[in-house]
Image 1 (cartoon, rainbow, N blue to C red):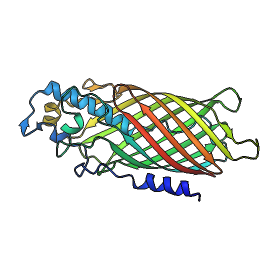
Image 2: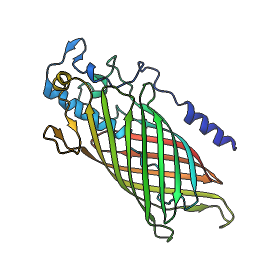
Image 3: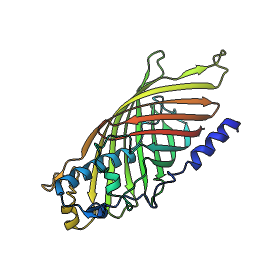
Image 4: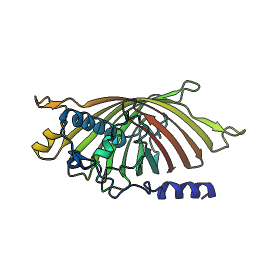
Length: 288
């Protein structure tokens, strides 16, 4: 394995949670009724904070737009280790406590969260593929688990860019006070270019892409009814119940680049949902 691959793999696998963060970095809805040693009695304020927390956590949990537009082909198979960084303090709070601080055991949430992730992707006939991932939210007892399917609407007609449609779902697991998941639907536009002076001989390739996505975040606070009422914790779901709000819809834009040498690749990605927080990612993988 090339030295640069070994170095980057080490970075991806050992990326720590922020040293200043308290353990654990779990989301605790039961802590939202008190802040700075004072009871928080403004249900409307807490309701807004809860909704913002749901939106930002949904962005963190959702399947990232982290694959090139080109699919793997009928026989392709991919394994990847990656780390995403959710920049929870990259948003102006206007001097108010962040929802992450309100739901943190020490009221001092980390300025970013890391999500070390293992993912697999399998190509299928007719320019389709499926994939799945599992990850751990650093410094917490929680994680994410999700899957997706993609189909290339346009592929292999260079110089026309490739265009792929993706549908997936990812859930938040391990939290006793909150059930949450995010459905994602998006388009990815990109291309793949050879690197080097000998077409057909060089194995280096570069694949840039951009994506436009819609996230639909569903959530249910699994705490007692009194606490739900105290913090204004609505249930966000698509079941049409009179006591239920619809899932929160969030637009998201993303971009990335994949560098390939032989069967190994490096991916660098970024995504931003304007109503919430940005995320960055880096990964190493192999394709068979």
